[in-house]
Length: 334
Ligand code: ATP
Ligand code: LTN
Image 1 (cartoon, rainbow, N blue to C red):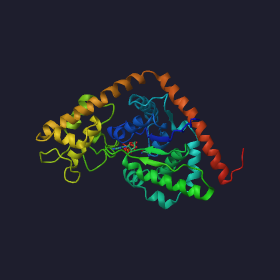
Image 2: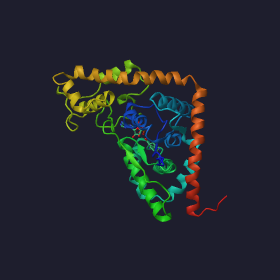
Image 3: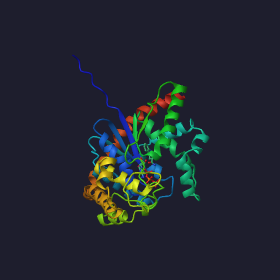
Image 4: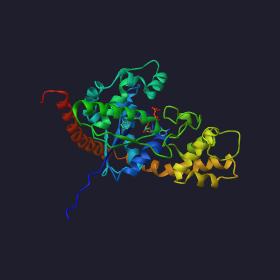
């Protein structure tokens, strides 16, 4: 009997090199990228064009883009299995973004929660790029006929908008884009700040944030200082015990234990035992990642080889979609 070769479904995701990678981005996104790399054909990107939607120092951006690649690899992403590249190396992202921007409503972009938050944070520099950021993200995704987009909860709205744009385009010009779906983890989709458990852990808030490259001492200090409540029970209750619930979630995501197992483990023990235990679990999770990343960073030629080869492959795939789009909208063939 003839064996049918099943084509793998495709994944695209990316993180901006606008700061150091955090425990939030690891648990919300990268951890899943690693888990999914065998079952899917994956593209993992360093979205430097997104990063410049807020002001960046050029030398830092350049350094971070490369160290982010080293950290992706150190987290367990295999460059032989995945296409790993830097967004600005594939000009088709910007080209498709222009076209899609002409099929996106001003009103839709105005409703984006991240735009509203970022324009408050950067009130003196609310650029057109910050506003059209989700269109570029839609281009990233649609360029590769992506099926699945593994991201944290905060990106759900952007993926929904991307679907709406794709559906609109397909409706006007017949099927052109695969409709992508967000893949959001059950545990760790929204890791909260250790300093303020009401807000998301984010690289722009270094105090409440654990970075993947933090030393074990720094990690322990941050967890010991984590804001909790004035009770003593280690119980998951997101409304009344936001800090403890966040630490429990981090503990589960770091150790693979279930919430029930974690609660049982710390039953009858105070926060004085629980907080350092979460710190230890995170130290052990990040120790090999930090070490491996430092090792890979020594080999600049290797990293350059990975991102160059990744971009070559990505450009090949991107060209196919972009040509189709240009033809459909009525541009004259070259
Ligand atoms: P910024 O401070 O600029 O908002 P960030 O720290 O939120 O940045 P991003 O680069 O926006 O990080 O996010 C990278 C990926 O990690 C996205 O998929 C995002 O959903 C996920 N992510 C970021 N922070 C968290 C978090 N606290 N919990 C879960 N997932 C997160
Ligand atoms: N907006 C995302 C980063 C991002 C992305 C993408 C994620 C840019 N393009 C495409 C998934 C797919 C963020 O995390 N802030």
